[in-house]
Amino acid sequence: MRLEDYWGIGPKTSELLAEELGVERAIRAIESGDVRTLVDAGVPRGRTTRILRRAHGGAGMDALATADARSVYDDLLSLAAGYAVTGGAADRIRVLTPLTDRATAADRLEEVLAAREAWESLDGAARERVLEAFVAYDEAGGTDRAAVETALALREVGLEGGTFDVLAEMDPTALREAAGALGYLAETDDGIEVLEGADEELDRTRDRLDAAGQLEAAALDVMESVRAAGTRDTEEFRGAVVEHVAAETGIDRGTVRSATAEGAVDTADFVSGTLRNLVDDLETRVGEREETVAAALRSEVGDAEGDVERAVETVTDVAFELSLGRFAAEHDLRRPDLVADGLAVQGARNLFLSGDVQPVTYAVGPHDLPGTGSVRPPADDRVAVLTGANSGGKTTLLETLCAVAILASMGLPVPAEEARVGSFDRVVFHRRHASFNAGVLESTLRSVVPPLVEGDRTLMLVDEFEAITEPGRAADLLNGLVGLTVDREALGVYVTHLAADLAPLPAAARIDGIFAEGLTPELELEVDYQPRFGTVGRSTPEFIVSRLVANAEDRTVRQGFEELASAVGQEAVQRTLSDARWVPE
Image 1 (cartoon, rainbow, N blue to C red):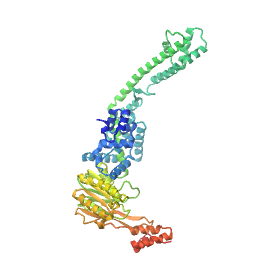
Image 2: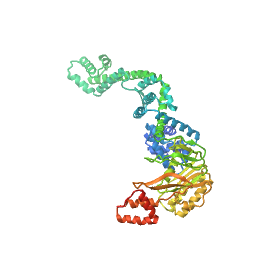
Image 3: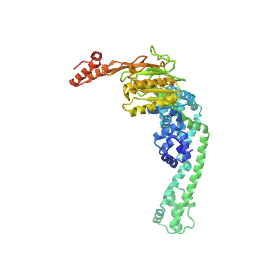
């Protein structure tokens, strides 16, 4: 296979990877999802993420049929990656894709929920120890020793369940001994190197080799120093050289004497030859001792080889699952029921909102949600037309439904007390656009209609068609889309302010409404974000005009807004201001 056969790899990227990694290694990195190797080779992280998403989940990515759906997907993974305990785990999260196999999604869901339970079972101190262990693992570059030490730390904390049970099966004594040995072994381009501190004799010989090497580089200085001390003949000079070298390097005289150069033609040749022989001898001694020490260290590692290999493999998996478990715990994500058809949520929250968020219950298609109180969405409508107040949360509800569908498709828990999520081969999410021209209308229809008619199981979440064409024609288009959605047995939620202009809807469609209830004393719009089923939502111009009247600092401007109030209902505006306890200046 060629590098350019992978989605997103053009000639320039292919040339870069071939030069930096070689074709075979680059392909291995792509096939294994190795983000770090590709990024280190010079491929930007964003491009690497997109390449790997397509390489490992192209069919799943095709389910995200619009730019807005892909935007929600990107935002969800960015949010989840923020809870990653290692850089590698964050990379793995960012390349998750929707899964086409429901059994695989169900398996991942079990793993993530088990990880959430494991994380929540730890007290605050234990969680800090876990995070510190993973920070140390990252800072050490994810070496084998770092993996072993992290596995020991996680084992001591007591993580249990699923992948974490492998930690309990490891021999801690053997792992500790292996960690000590691994700490002195390092892989280099030339093989295994024994690091300083592993063996006193090896360290001492290396020090002497360094000292001898420095003298060899300054052989003429050595010769001049010995001459300056005063010597009467050649034998005395040679003896003085041995004494000088031994004193400067700490090498015993016998070793230096055995390295003296025989047959030297003059004093300079004698000094340089002796030092060269001495360096060669010490290099041989270092090599032999390093082999002996390395063998002993490898033997210590070998006693726990199976556990070491498991630690290296398990720590990365634990980091990945625990990261997703933290994400689920932080946002109280729950298990969705993966069903054949329908999308229903009870007590759902939008993950991208902060503060006190009102949960909502909503559904399209068949479902068995128990509901809460009188709030139980109908279970026989495949399409809902959502109407209601400006700033009433209609688009937010679409985004919430989109997020739930995407999270469930990836085998992740969802932000809802209960959820029933069908299998969708196309998710069409289209936000409202401010432009109003034929080009926008055409591009919008091109983005939402093909996936509806080409997919077998399509979810349509479309916001305010009236924003891209004149209201009368927008109502006609919306009627057509609702009918097409029903005919194709797809599911859909369409947001509009044109409920009064719609023709009678098909039997499998309904109209829902969100209502604004007034202004708070702080003049904020007060909205019940829970849609009312089968009811057209009430618009809120009187609330908006009331707020403008109250916030106007200039008396003349205020009078202008008060005149405008007569057009939307002077009595309603005054009642709103009274309820908000606003007193004119």
